[in-house]
Image (cartoon, rainbow, N blue to C red; front, side):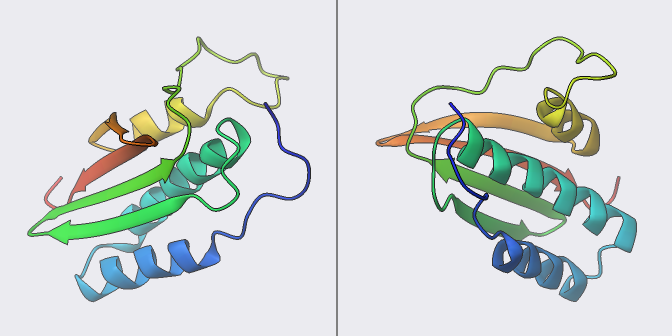
Length: 122
């Protein structure tokens, strides 16, 4: 499924993530990794689940950042094998897995949440 039109604006979610991590003293390169992982999950929720405005929750507890992106589709994301060098998609979940410490999905009453965690000490 690929919805028509432009993807929804994720700038507010990105700004909230950046602001929370900056206030907590996280280094810029880790903030960049978190932003990229968030972007991948956000676009996946729009592109594959058809969510016009995915719900983003950012939680910082101690030295752990948890970001979840929820949509209304019960279909769990599939991590494909390696995308070829000329394929336009298929690398998003590989990126999330390589940029973060933990990554997973949780079913919800209506749909699912896809999340990642980063540890500040790592």
